[in-house]
Image (cartoon, rainbow, N blue to C red):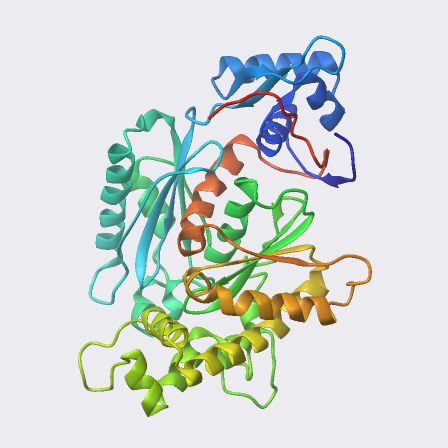
Length: 417
């Protein structure tokens, strides 16, 4: 126990206690008093109600330090669930998570296309949410809701999906599935999923860099997603790397996404005849062209097989992205960065060391503290997992400025699965 504390905001003592138990894994009532600053009587009352509601279980005792061993508490993982949906032109990913953030079931189905009316897509998503829950054998009454996330800026930024611009997807899905639906963007959701599942640990300023077709980032400050005025904070893909660089779809020039994103890598690979053949990239006028994500993965595969131009393109992309990430780290004074998203799931072994080296070399506050760079353990499906975590956080641990949560909360001694 003890150590530096970090500001964690909650609206009620119940939310605060539940979140401390979640963060700790296992903790005693005495530990909760020390972590929250609440009185013993308050902790006893709140814990009793959490146990009565089935959210918390007693789980053995901590190792004795001379007195009577403390009874340990943990979340009852099977007491509540949430569903996350990541909607994208490439595919719609679904994840069902339990109260601890562990994935119970997940699946990916056909994405959004220009020929399907948004209402038809919503109906399809509703049926697939029901199938996910039923297939996992989870009591629907224990499902708190559905998180729905899409690429930052919305689906309508894709030229073929402009008909989604004014479609109220969250509201329509809520009506169809009969559960509360919480909307958000994919990069921020991916960051929240990492936080809820305990990967972030004691980090106070944390970001998840998300790369699929584009590049974005979600930023959490003391456990709170930082959204910005319009929900578009963390657009690391639109950090300018070259004022005279290529035009980006956002209207700027030389953005990190335009210079180093998956689409830029794929375009360069297709322009090189030897690499295009080695990677199996399609030609214009041939069969239906795969998605940018699929072609980027093909370039990664060619690099792994020793194609030198493919590796050079990935190295160049990683170096440019590292500079954009350093800008984000300098602005937010990050102490932890997680790489996530399907493109980084495929190419993380190339990008991670380059980004870590850049931060070690040139992060402004490196003399005060390092920035640790990690790969997500669920990079390919992180937004869907995070979308479900949005529901759990919103309903069970709503936040506001307040409590300071010490690090190193967990008290060992009990064995549980």
